[in-house]
Image (cartoon, rainbow, N blue to C red; front, side, top):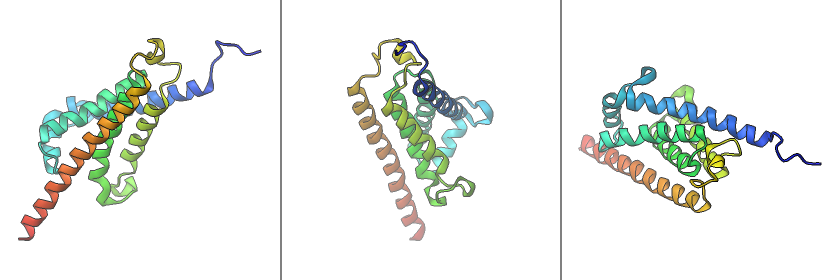
Length: 179
């Protein structure tokens, strides 16, 4: 006999993964936007974005902060899960681009950590939030199959544009310095 209301380990696992990943992303994004947890706030993040070659720097700082803080908060809640996962993954793609020159491992300044956060956020966005989520509670009105495709396509285009613009700017700067 199967009990319909039993606790499902998969749903508990998704809850733990969503809340843990979402909280880390939300905290990281709040450093960028509000200066919480020792972050530089929007002013400091804007300066950092400019130094890292993101142009325009302030919109880049806002987008990164919102992708992390907003995407992370929504992931933790299990609300609009496809859009949340896609936004967080796109923000982490920008972070990966910054860390690629240092190699893979975080101990050497590499992209290991943002890649893990990005892949985890993407996996949650693709898999869905599970039963213990606001998406489930609201009948998945913000978690439809077409939203997965639209969210991830939009996030991929946005991330490719931002990372590509940064790479193009860095290539131009390198040419100017070598002239």
